[in-house]
Amino acid sequence: MKLRLTIGILAVLHLAIFLAPWLAPYDYAAQNRDYPYAPPVRVHFFDPAGQFHLRPFVYGFRQQLPDGRWVQDSSQVYPIHFLSNGHAFEVEPPGVLFLFGTDGLGRDLFSRVLYGGRLSLLAGFVATLLSLVLGLVLGTLAGFHGGWVDRLIMRGGELFLALPWLYFLLAARAFLPLHISPVQSFLLLVAIIGTVGWVRPARIIRGVVLSARESGFVQAARGFGASSAYLIRRHILPLTWPVVLTQATVLIPQYILAEVTLSFLGLGVGEPLPSWGNLLADARQYHTLVEHAWMLAPGFAAIPLLLCYLTIADAFVDRQAE
Image (cartoon, rainbow, N blue to C red; front, side):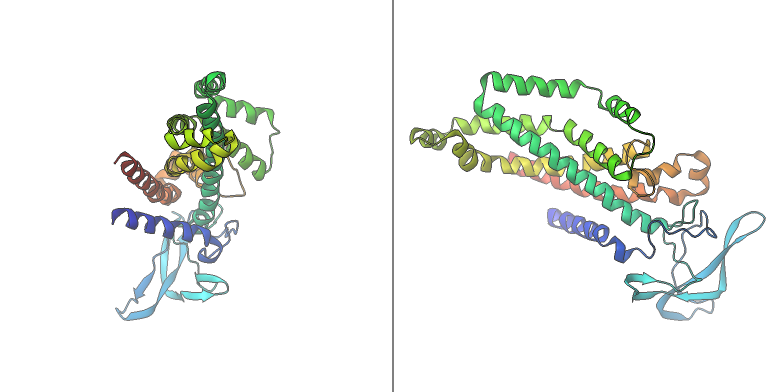
């Protein structure tokens, strides 16, 4: 029951991120310079007279000078319209619907969190796919052939684990032009974190293949003249899928967190594309964090997603141990 609930929550989160262009009331790059660092708006169902409204609404709000404090203007009421103009919900201008507040350029943080989740998830999925493909190929070769092939691949894996990949990423970024496209930054980030992570799944898959290679049905098929390629494809690879699936649930949250960390440090995807990492980078300054706490929203958005993946991974590991 717990696993089903976790999978359901994870599916809802992925669906919300996938439907970002529809769920987000604004484009991720849309700027409203009249509302820099505007706090989250409050959605109301009751007006000042205490009367209930079936359609939720927001009040207008403005920045009060000279202290710069944001105040609501209850004389301006803007109903929230659902399924309007290709969006799930929105308000008519000059009303604004900043559910998570805005950043320094007046960009809606709720919309940017949804759009940023797409890039962070894509980085996690692509890097995981790269790691698992490398781990599956190299682990199968090491376990099936043994001998010098096994020693070469496993010693190479130990070398990969010993390399300081953060410094390698810094060096790779230093050799590139100062202004590279966001797509190039994304591919560089995914290639490095995906290549780093192949060693662990390769070792586990190697153990499965070593065991399967000596099993009776594989030896019988070999006795009937089956080729190595046939044995691997028909008899050995199917035994590795549970390991691959479990490793995927472990690696995806790790790589999402890696993308968030590296983009936060300025080594990943940069503007204008949003990701959870570069969105959190705006909160690096102490005064921003203290005065505009809603800038931490991307970090809080990532927490339930990562917890769901880790819960599913624990459930898969427990089932394999039974």
